[in-house]
Image 1: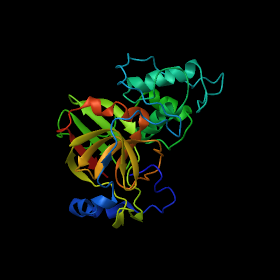
Image 2 (image 1 turned 135 degrees about the vertical axis):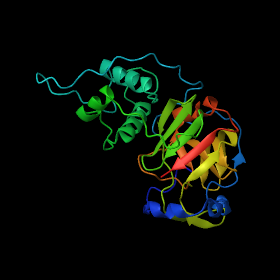
Image 3 (image 1 turned 90 degrees about the vertical axis):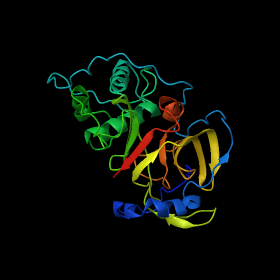
Image 4 (image 1 turned 180 degrees about the vertical axis):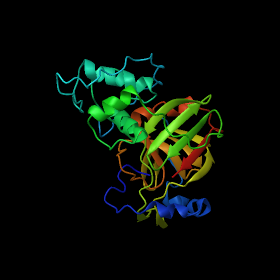
Length: 277
């Protein structure tokens, strides 16, 4: 599962997800592979500039609603990466109150905020965009909750929605964190460690089994703060490249800033991990 993978390979249809989990485990060495542990080294700087805080963010106080952009007296404000100011800070506070993670509320529209915007758009069913325009501003005033994939799956659980490329963590039955992810790209590949297969994130019911801190090396690259849910073959892990498209070899990539504290939010081993199309 390396951050150098997959972007140029053709994306196959989701129908190949019918491959059984047993077959995927047999291809484990060509998925994430057996990890070579490198210890809890400090997080590398993200190639996208994302920060990796050492501790989980504090639960934010309820934020004031985003200003309405419906006034006919002035055109709606559109926020975009690279901008700064009070409007960006209000956006960050609102996203944090809704359990997304835009990074610190510093008024800077950087990579962390952009990834939270992507997650929010995916949950709301909005077209993916880097900008926060009128449609997203309206959705922020009256947002939808993420679709519940497994209603009886337990009070503390992780749900990964492959159709929307979103991860939702529940604690005590309440949404605690919503994150953008990048999952298996569906392309055919061969691993330097031997074996070939399709880049598929397996659908099914799993359990968070093992946490490996810091950077670890696998046949296909490197992973950060990995929470494995199938042996040491498939994990939820940090990566410096978590694009809008599903591009991984089968693991679930999360942004580096979230990977820094994600593993502290739930019990390992034991937390259910549900993955659905």
